Image (cartoon, rainbow, N blue to C red; front, side, top):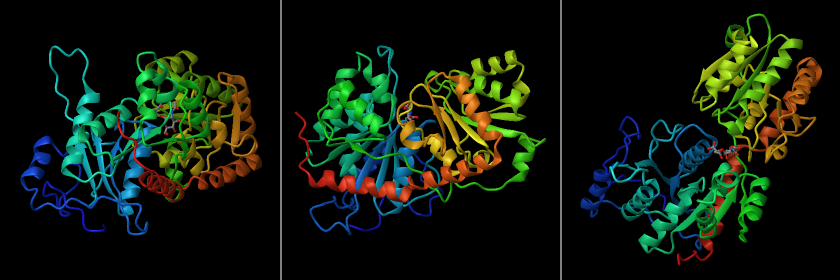
Length: 431
Ligand code: GMT
């Protein structure tokens, strides 16, 4: 293929940004000017690989969260390598900014109707996938987070009657460990995974959980989360450090969406123990259901003045660059992307021993892991590291080295090779 990507909307490289949603009328426009518009050639992986670019429809949650970050960074990296990427979601993914010639965003429009007490997103998404595939060339849909994206893609494939379109589902975490297990979703999640042409999971833990919890007899490829280690690298900024810890205090950091599963109150309890021994500050990044409980807790404990709630941030390399320790006491964590971001910035991690965290954090080398809820052990580990500069330095270096093994270039290549493999296999025909 290799030709310039033409948008049917007359979207030109001189346009200020690609963030204009590809609306329904815009895509209809493609039909009208269809004679002039040459959609990209469909990929054929039975031919020589080198010249092949794939046309990918990526669906993800656009909001704050690891699966959306992984999907967006993957899409951006694939586009930079020459593939055509169509993001299909209900809002512009948070990390999608700036212009790129071969990325388009297609917004799933939701309408309300008094009869529908609940929005019919699964159906609207399936319809949008069909529309995009009809007016653009799509070789595969890559769904991030099974619920409901894999189901919408299955429906879209069925409706399109184009059996060669492949559906790849990437399992991220609570889609398998929590939401998907609910009796009202389990059968459809199992079905949609089984009817995906390819399935990837972000850790060995998640792969095993999928097989055992859903009784799925299917190849699942483990492709871990990744990080751009050129961007995520510790930068010295004494100004930021001076502002956050004016008296040379140690800095502990946690980032999350403040859901129960993240156990942010444990972060506060661990910090409460640490600050009794070590002058320190706690920085909390993110927002979510438990934020106000946490703020109350800090006031009740009388530590509010030493805790900074920064709220949602799009990226936090500057804060990670001044951090001495990252805390992740989650109840469930299939990979732990934010721990990886911290490690890339040379920050050791103290975490719980759940899910995929032991696959990322090397206990006694890049940080420490302890049982869920074992606050005093996690606090002891934190105190030990923060009070021993030599050990801390060794752990910081080892954290960076470990993060380098998840360098984005290598992991993106794993996705490309996986696409290639799935495209070379006969597609699953919807029944
Ligand atoms: O599964 C979730 O809770 C949602 C998801 C998200 O969108 O934040 O997070 C998961 O996906 C990330 C990216 O693959 C992983 O790094 C997180 O560990 C994982 N979260 C959980 O398993 C709780």
